[in-house]
Image (tube, rainbow, N blue to C red):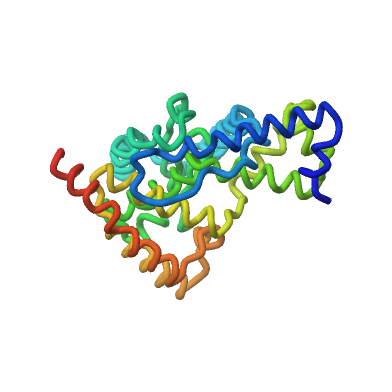
Length: 280
């Protein structure tokens, strides 16, 4: 079924279609004019899910996750050295997030560390960041490598990949009827409970991963972190994947193509890194 074709039929559906088309036409403006890496405009599909609803669901799930970790004694305290380290990295990256997504101005960023052997990290919609101790300890991440992980995860949130994935899942699964509701013609409230349960299990596309790599690379370079660390990070990931299965790699597949893409883009951001490093 071509739900976009069907959406052209009827006045109510037509208004919804035109609203989505207008949002898509303006999406190119969300790619910063001064960006050094080359990525396309955000997918029009993300406009089919309300950002406020998704960010609210993310905040709720994040709070529940922290509460569970706290109850198990697994939530690192604010004065933990690794927590201070991660939050210091975030303070250097967040100022460079706004050009990639105007909504980031209103996000209440959080960074927390959870004791777990999992090699994993994520940034939920709305800027809710979590690292697991396994990714820091088992991979022995240096400062620049940890910044590359954080930049990559922040990029997923800034490019609204979760919003896009959920929209495409619903449209594919339920067709035009639900599609018109997501376009604003029906009640979105009943979807809220479903959204939060999906955020940590989403698998992004190869295109999403490439975008996150490149946008994260630029964020980290602007924050004065060495872009060459992106390559050593994924080399470590590849070695670890050869030893055992990694939770991180179930949603962030590694491989030589990924490393080659990063190597090709490092020269594009080296000047940003040098400028930021000199500025201190």
